[in-house]
Picture: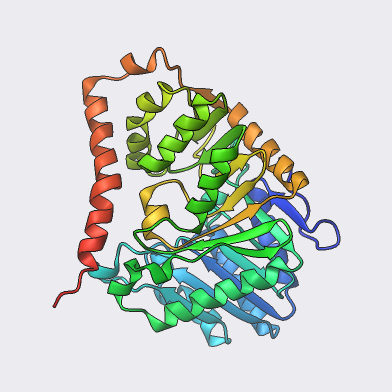
Amino acid sequence: MNSGPLHPDLAATHWLGSGEVFVRRLLRALTGAKRSIRLEVYIFANDRIGRAVRDALTLATLQGVEVKVLLDALGSNETRGEFWTEFIRVGGQLRWFNPLELRRLPVRDHRKLLVVDERAGGTGGFNVAEEYSGDGVSHGWADLGIVLYGPAVGALAAEFDRMWAAAADTPNLRTLLKRNFRTTRRIVAPDIQLLATGPGRTAGAFQLALREDLAQANDILMIVAYFLPTRGMRTLLRQAAARGVRVRVVVPGKSDVEFSRRAARHLYGRLLRHGIQLFEYQPQVLHAKLFLTQAAAYVGSSNLDVRSLYINHELMLRLTDPDIVQRGWHLGEELCSRSARIDPDTWPSARSWFERLRDQWSWWVLSKADPFVTRWLARDPR
């Protein structure tokens, strides 16, 4: 896969096409930092990769680099306690987003963001954990990301600082579902838009931009780990297929969240009937988030499900440079080529009544019950 070296003189923007490339470039970037490191991630694991990254962050701090690490309190819970003791002792800064309280539990910081020296920045689907250190084919999860240099990096740094401040303020939970957390798209460089979203009942920046691109697309390819599109998004995909657009969606054949995979399967029949092509990635767990049309490539942390679109904090980039979009298509086609296509003729009879009932139940829990419980927990107790 096209990954490109992490060096500002070689490319202003380049793709990270596998976890093993991501881990290698991440450690190199942390080791080479001179002034500052900003790292925001949902899962930071207490395993071989997590300890290596933590030690690199600690060493950078000892060398005078200002290091800030922002972790989700739920996703990175296994590194609480003594894991960060030495890092903090030598001057590293650590904050936890949204403490683990029952009423606050559903709203998470699912973003992945790294900015080094305000000269290089990146985002994608990668967490800091052992399962992200493979090639996605023979071992490890299939994932991808993007590295940027130039004017967009300052905007990424400012976006990190916004969430860093939010983690310190711990806003009243009732405000988390109001519109002030639904940010708008920002043009941060030529051909790059930053789409940061948070909890709310209205469509966020990523969803609005994607809708516009889908409505004008003549070819659509989605690579998505958790696929539970809203009714409006399904309508757009059906309309595109009806006007002759090739619409392909690649989802996991193997998933770390089996409940989500079953929920997605509940939608297969109605999508297949409208000419949408569905594929399941076969070699390993698929964790990537890549959305492609002929005009744009979207990459970042957001899945196409209710939780990503309306509950979690997410970060996506919309890239429109033709060369970058073409390279994104290369990555997407490579993942699609390793996927098994769902046969629309045999799918309706391929599952037992129990499997269909189980899939329907999974869909109801994730698309209906989850957002309802989130709003109920966030209600004003007075």
